[in-house]
Image (tube, rainbow, N blue to C red; front, side, top):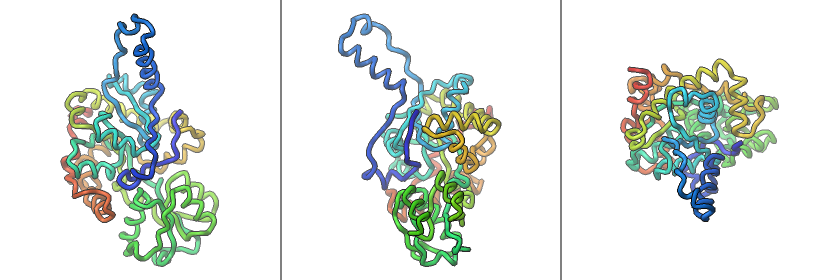
Length: 354
């Protein structure tokens, strides 16, 4: 079981405030233990024995439904079905996985498109090869009953975690409704504290993600005024790979993509069993974890093809300017990234036999 209390956050902001805690899988620990035993000289036979074959491709995974779903692929045998030799590496701290990919410790990583902008702006050789999902309701601007519309939001206090996905949701919501951040009072709190502040009446609104969205609705004290469902395409969660891995471990990446489409179908057809598998990974009860599934739009083959097609209004390339504009405005990235250079649709095409 792996557990973390953080959701996707901007590494450019939180790199100095979050502890660098990385939880590796049990298999990784056993390999390190075997190595230690050999080094300590506990038997020349151990030293002479051939080392166990290492997985072909190391992929970082953190706590978000579209990424935890990779464990469904693993447990249901979809990787083996498509001959993808995959080692999933769990990161309790998502921001550490970003660094691990950028430094070459991982072949691929589960990360957001916005978190890929910074490395791309620096010219790092990374490519988005698959869209796992879009947030489609899991992130929301929750308001009290006295706030009926965005005009009522003027001058009100809004709790959120600055420079996180929540901040991006608020910026998008305000812009779409003729307001700016200057029209409201932002109170910088972690997501859990923001929800608590809202429920206690200390702030007028809060931008949070599930399970806090569901908890606030269940309390009867708040309702969503705007959710990530109202900004389709702008919060894509991806599989991002090193260029060298795309060249040397292409077979495994293509197999992963094929396995993903089986995974997406399995989650759609068997939500209870999928929630049970995913809940165990993050240390939650299956019934509690199921709240995440309706707010996560898992991407099938057709949705991925659209996301990889530049002409599509919701494609990765099309939404990149909006995302990078926010990051540049908040001084979270150094320079404008070339989104086209950060996308490789050829693996998807190969996986689909095109």
